[in-house]
Picture 1 (cartoon, rainbow, N blue to C red):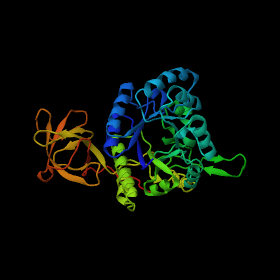
Picture 2: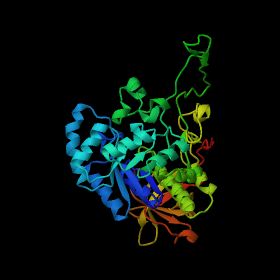
Picture 3: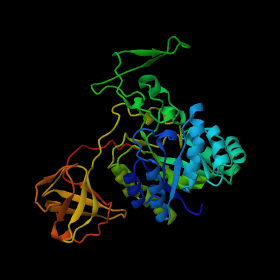
Picture 4: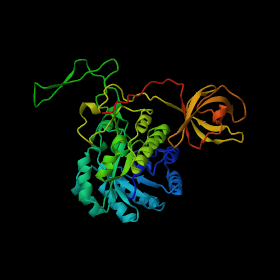
Length: 425
């Protein structure tokens, strides 16, 4: 690839639109039955076609996730589905199961094949095997790999594109192949219905200890405070300050996790990484502004996973499953009316007199005050709540002609909702 690709998740058509609007070069999504996002997945066949039309209309790409580990009963319907999806001309299939990959070769050889992170490809010999035997064009790197290991894979298999996760949740299990959810709630993560059991608060007996039976005198203490204990809760991955090292190692696609995350997440993460990638491509030094923007969204604290060393205890957040964000999304711009007022889709309460920030894809944002709030009927109201229909916002005069576009975010400036745990380790 001639340039670095920013690859964003799309769990819904709206998240896809926002990710593309805020700078994604490509997005990944897939049908629920063959995807590892069977829950909270809005992409039926018609929506998949619409997604492809939207992205291709902007000269951007869509990769379809077909990365489930299949039982026998899924093989026959997979053959039919692959041919139907191939007719839509996606830019690639993301697959983990060797059997399903072979079906892709047989039924849709014209579509690029990308090896999912779930396949646990962690060395250059395995990468070469997949390249030579089943013709994959891209390897999605295991999240357990270090930078130097990635560089060697590229050196040994130079004709293989490398894609690496740079941001998002980290699974407690190796390459996400977890059985904890299946054990605790009968929802198999390998079939796309994980319930994130590892993020839950665990109650332990005070003073309880786990003994290593190989060493009877060696105990691992389990502790909790008034908040409980989150013993399996990993911090979130964030590589935005180290994208240059990934590029030097041969990575061409920077991938963000989070198909079930919010629309706010999709837009803000895409915006930050778009800015950082553009700076990198132009030879500019990293700007801390982009990391500061990531601190405005919910996170469990950031770290760099296995990229530079074993994360150890610093890679875990033992206090809470999700930290509070420092900014609240209150609406998304949907256009303007004939009087120049913003037509908005309300996400959280917005009130007359409230100070807001409007953020588009570019670095600059606009602050304004809401001086009028109107229903679509024209009635003036003091406040608008989500789910109550379309509203029009009149801003303070100095900001009325601001450069706002459809899908720009509206954030609350005067709502105190707590500070995020922004520790970077």
